[in-house]
Image 1: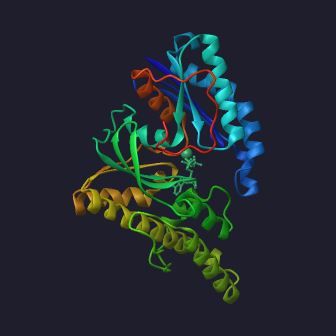
Image 2: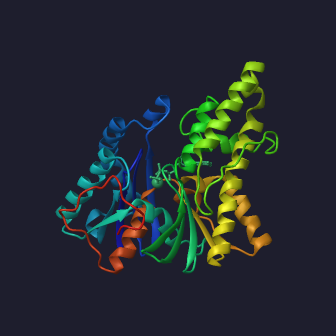
Image 3: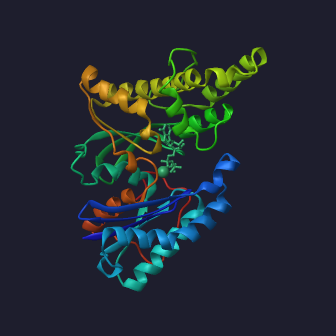
Length: 338
Ligand code: ATP
Ligand code: FE
């Protein structure tokens, strides 16, 4: 079974071909246009998707060494995301499925981040049900109990900013370009995580809050810069390491609460922030220290990619859960909505 997956929910245009759950290609075109604006500009994102989608799909087919006639079904991201971006992928997927007269499958992007764990790969094993998934992305921060592929329950989530936003906004305060998360990770490797202390938020057991932390960081930097105008340049590594340490501490605290409450020790992470090296290290340590079993996705399946859309489509294909051609994109879609 060949599934062509198409992802266009935010600022990455991606297409992937998988065969019986194994990835044959996973092409991602990053949109560079947004860096200079300090965030994604929706209007520019949809235009870039429109430019990229045909070549990206063609490349995905070429790399998979198949012709489009071999594709069994087309899976696309229906939501959540930016409406203009979603419309490009949705319309393209519909037209191609109609043209090829093959099933069309709508995919929930947040379910796909979680289900990326079911991509068949020699290097990884999928988590057994039930497991806990910490979804940490640019728009979401959730602790999910997954009892079946498409049976997910949100146990806790952020009451304000997402963790990816916390990384990106902190980076912006430090004068780093968008998206700053990977840069904080990079500089943190050279810094002392205990150099500066930031206050952790107080919210419910399994909920998150990051807006206070961001403000705390802003005030701290402003205060230090009044004393020394070069404070950020001189201490960049230590600042990044301290910010990252605080964020990862918050995530680990909540995961510990989730394990205590559910007694489930199979822990997966998903979403763009799961590319972060510190959270990956800390989870590995938790296997030793707390007896957890942890599931860390391959780097390329953490940030937005179409392979995760294709694997989710494949799982739906096996259940013959096809979309109607009248299906429309949905900017707001909960992880629990099928
Ligand atoms: P959502 O999936 O919630 O709709 P999104 O698709 O925009 O949001 P992802 O692509 O899953 O989000 O993740 C992007 C986020 O991941 C950005 O905020 C980025 O800064 C962050 N990120 C990527 N790599 C790292 C890293 N190594 N360390 C920290 N953050 C990172
Ligand atoms: Fe995403």
